[in-house]
Length: 469
Image (cartoon, rainbow, N blue to C red; front, side, top):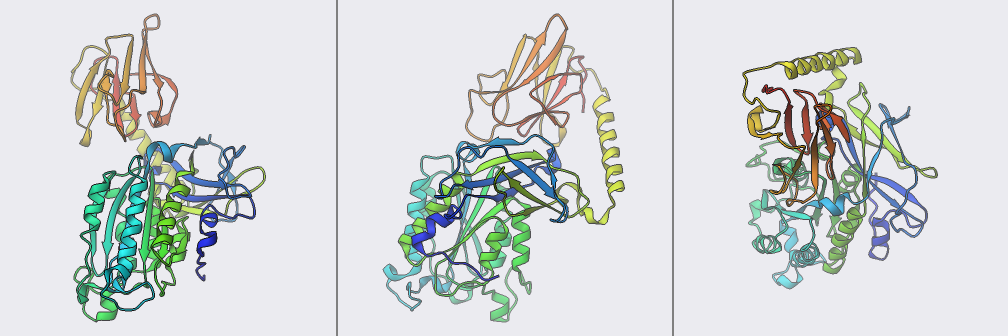
């Protein structure tokens, strides 16, 4: 497919989708929660005829399909969060081309005048972008790539760290001046997973040319990759598996023929910037567009297919189909029949239920909660001595757990004791979903051995003094 390059006059409008008609699009799919909760997060952009974000989309329906042909409406409840990206912040990875041609002029001519070089314009645009996120929850990481892939800064909100690392980018020597574009996209797809980042994940890649791998054009094996040549298809699969949307920016005369398609396959777009001002505008526009997305969370269906197609619709319009990888939940499910998969799930569930009922040595004689740490080891015990026990991320709460952001005064969950019934009840709080025995709940009577999940924290409830491992 031929890349569509957007000129500056309509750049902002096209980033917010089509100006001529109301439009709804799935700009990101995060299926990394399939294994733990069978849930999928869709990131949705909905714009009106003028390209403005639609505040009230009306009733929404999500459809799934194993083949993109026969569609079934999702029967589970849709959880719509219109402030998710603003509240949780966005994780950005800025992928900057540092090949030799980035030190040519904007017209593609060799120059020793740093003021004329593309890299100088790119750095200035990056400074503008970083300045716009200084007081927000957005996090930014920085990578420079050429023959090598260099992580210059891990995810941070600290502008000074990012600027300091960016200023260290220098013109590479000839053997380091190649453009390993596809391999860099492949490697960057693992960045957020390695960092433990959650929520909205965005990669913005800037490149002034085509994929120009060391082995193919030098003849010698790459110092790290050897004779391996990365492909666009590998980049698309890796990015989609990790729930990452790619935005691509062409910043030169030569353009990679597949970069735009890689971006679109992940829900992103490709843009053409000719100078530093246009580039700064592109960066800021992408951030604003992602900020205005809303998140739709639902419980995924069970399909015997390696990919599941999904689309979202209002009463008037529907999005184009996207897909996520089903293997995150079932492994390579294409190698198993559905009955076998169901048997495996049934056996696993039976073993889990058996383990939750096993009683070991007496540890606590009073009702209590046990916070479970890595490897299943008991991390902390909270006695349930009061009528109300509050779980949250602040030190003021009765049981303090880890949270995704700064400590909050909000209650993550509350355990209430009913003296008449002599029973305990869990009431979900604000923020992340609260689950009991792998089911999302808002209110749930508790029994010995129940496993409570608040965010990423596992808590065992025990009202009879036995420790469940």
